Length: 205
Image (tube, rainbow, N blue to C red; front, top):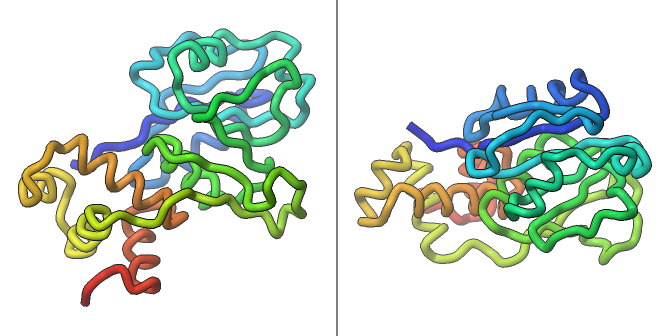
């Protein structure tokens, strides 16, 4: 069975948090592990969370009552994807990323996959504001030779355990490679990663 990226979602209200969570519950490779609001975030185990997604409409709302979960993620170095403005009093970690509130589901999922894989996510505009319809994010580094090898195995329909056995590495190593591939290609799933790999000539047919 494919190991999934565990996502904890925080929103201005619980309905918004669950709406964002639905993006992941309906996608292979992701698993929402909890929901909360800026003013009332339930406790969660950072060791069971790969990425926290926080969506807020204003920087002020996120600074009124700093949620315990956000503090916990900072202390435990869990990557955070901010959808919308970041609180003025909160310093971004190098493992964090920021996307506009109107980012597409594919962009959001690809950013989460990239953060879970330990990749840097940043705007192509070098910090300058871009119109929402022109926004993209850059993923550093092209696919490595090993990642291309894994992508070709995925294209052949092999599962993570099967690929790990063939390449004589651990399942966690393959999970990392697959997450990295999905993030670098800007895909939202293994299937989309294969499709993009075919278009870019990365898969031998």
